[in-house]
Image (cartoon, rainbow, N blue to C red; front, side, top):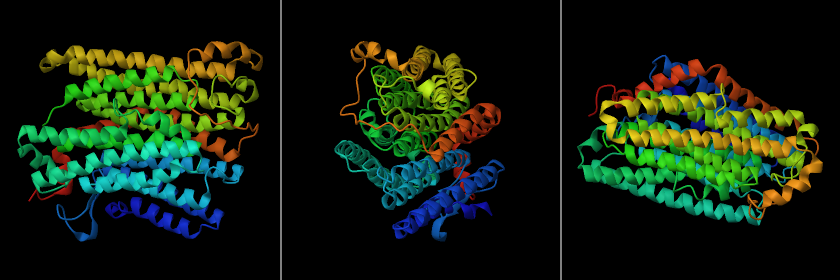
Length: 528
């Protein structure tokens, strides 16, 4: 019964985008359509999550063409939780964007362009999460990337156009790797259906498997912004309007992480690249957070922390145990909400304080205590302070790593696992230091102290290149504040309900560890 709802998570945003485009001259109607569409997807995603967790099949053969010949849409526990958290974040950020647009008279986000592009981006994200074959996954990526090009360059400033060009080039390179991998996989196995590939890939020679495996990892690694493929992100994301940056930071890199999880657990379950992933995860943590330390601009600082915390997810995937995947799933959900919240709060800081640099901000605690709280809670969460979800996720990952290092067959690489755990602990501490330093400078110190700090800070941290000057507005739209507050509450709920969420993540991880579960969903009668 609920399987009929699966295509709607993609179809509704696409129909909504078409409607929003037709209603280009009617701003209120566009807002209503976009909000109604994403609210509907939130409800559908929640229903699908409950149904999937109860064991109800949620596989749809589009057009009645059964796998492996037709397009198959699959919702398992991992897909369901990714759909739900993504839909919630997209809805909240849309409300934030509507509030900003009304306040700014749509200078930053022209309504006729923004709403259709935003809904197309949403459709691409949702399609990627439910794709049952590699080519449909590629289509989902291209849908969201084509929309992201438009959203990234909204306003048409020189800075945004330059960032957009870099983003487009990097994305095209990633797409080229992905499409080449798909072509080679199809040539070697005769299929791109992921369930069927889980059987056929294992029949290929090991050297062929390795080449195909690395091609997909490079493609998805660029999208997930893992080291050394993350150089493009800190210069691209901060230039966009606040709601766009928030969605990009919270969601787009996680689509790449999701694809890596599918690659490692379903397609190449027998091909072991644990050492490579472990090294990449550790380096991503350290290089990203060291870059954050040198930033004076909070948007660039958060972009570097975004890169560093992707390393935790790659570490969990490298561990490859049930606990490792469960902790990774929980951490992905945590990071989507917390990172998005911090970027939305940064948008409020930019409006209220007139800047995003610690060399230009001071006295915000006295001027806006509530804004200080909105930033402080997710900052502590991202830094891993107990009892927040960031702490719980990291502890889960570290415990999974410790169990892996203690296994009898892991004695040869135990030192590597412990080294990455140490890197994770250091990264968490530096994250906390970098964010609390910004909070202290922007909120705690008084306006009169600004001159004394400036000369010292300019010698140790760098401003954003060609940073724009923003006019401070001492009032912020209610919708923007309400949306940010809602996401802060969601981050707190991830802590309050950590037990049930972790239990769900455990069940999702158990499915991931056994590829036969996914295969049986797509091919109930066995692979033909």
